[in-house]
Image (cartoon, rainbow, N blue to C red; front, top):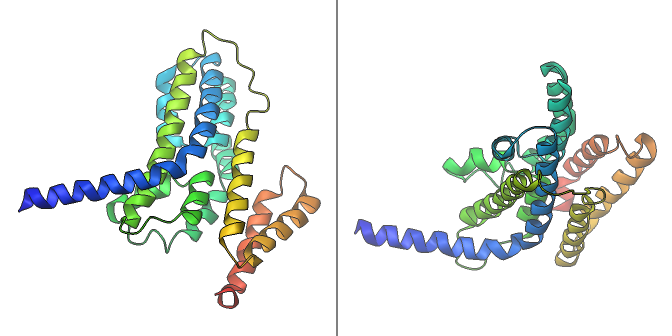
Length: 236
């Protein structure tokens, strides 16, 4: 009886994996290339693939990992590192708030889902839905897990090949911007209610004008969260 149950469970997990994988392919290209860029920079700063692996596994924050290369090379103190990390990754707080209801049935997978909630994973989890008969929790887990794996592969690969090639990283960060544009367009097409999207665009533009391109993100997220919370009942 137990073997039958285990077989059914494995089949359920495998279906969720197959259903989630195609949705992560656009992220794979961006994460691997960005990870390679990070790994090369880290290796050039004097840190090998072991550092790249553990930073990719436990830090898993693209922008902060690039910043960390300079911090490691410059010997910045712990307090400054903490403050800078908080500033760079403050937007993750809003992602977590937005996913509280979605993650409430994740069980033992909950800590990892929180840890793996990057920009791209957050976007996919809100845009993509599992096929009929596929376990939703495993579907979300594999989207998060596969994206994480892509990043780890890229970081380690970059650190391994960094000593033997010259790599110009200028402009490579636009890959993820392009991915976000595609995700936004697809989400716009899939939803008839465009009010939340328009609120996001409007708030971002206002904050961009007021605070500039370097500092607009956090105020924009605060304003968007405030307005959407106020309009939650009306938006249904």
